[in-house]
Length: 106
Image (cartoon, rainbow, N blue to C red; front, side, top):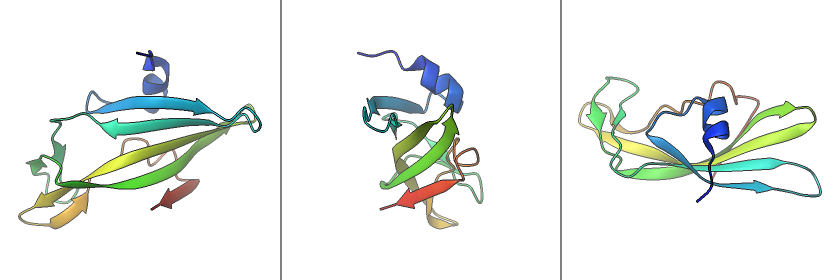
């Protein structure tokens, strides 16, 4: 098991998230962090604040930044919740505001 606490601290990840892998492209020098939520974590509805277990997920990829000519990407499974008031919504992602330069969903 690898210690990814350095990357977790940079992203400000709560205990609801975990880094499952880090890959480095040796040709380009790009670093990609692969994240997912921890099993059993509950998330707040971004609209009404209800606390729910995930009911599904979507995939996303962001460019976190270009530090010293190294590009850091984040790939993650983003939990979705089903809220009685708001329907199915994606949870708020802690790194999304810092990584707004590039976003790719599939």
